[in-house]
Image (cartoon, rainbow, N blue to C red; front, side, top):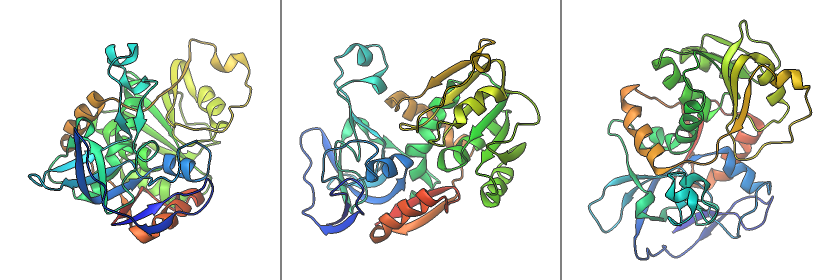
Length: 318
């Protein structure tokens, strides 16, 4: 099979021919139909997060079961948990210290075939094409987990309007919330997409919103946005950091946090998150804005993501 492989931190993905992987006990072999591109893939490729190498990245996999009934399944970032630790026993398997993650600890979906633990594969909603449903498996799932941490916030700020934010805007608007979309200064295409999806206001990340926010989610991996978001939320508001990696957060005066504001992070996802969100998706209904890349151009997809040339989500299609 063909696969795009990361062999050294900071080096381009290399196309190689590999034997088709063989599933072990409790695993499924999937023929990959599409795999979403996530900023975490970029952090791994650029050496900002550690991983065993060589590795096939990609953790938003849509595929069909080989040698079985041909079911269409989705494979997310969380690929295995121990089931024994206190976090697993308490229903917080996203914090399992022994967890394995797709595209980091086990080979992912930037390939023609992938193997995954059957317990962490999920039936996908009908009516969404493969490339459209792929971004829901991380951008959608972790964004939805971050949204739940915002409680019943009516005025919601989203900092960084990429794959996760454009999915989450649709969910928030369907729930009757007002979305305030913050983008890079001058990013007219992202702001236009935000307005098209129902955002009440768009502007640069450095701008103050027209009214105080009840909550904000920082998707962009830029630590300097955190104090800006804290200043944008009203007393009692919440700021959620929605990424797995972020540049250092600069110091800020206590006054920005005072007033019972809350600053917290979101980590990974649980299988319950996946079941709940994938059942919700058709009721919104969610429609993702995607740019398709053939497998041979997986590195180009990462480069476009790094440079901010993408609007919506990127998807690799073998």
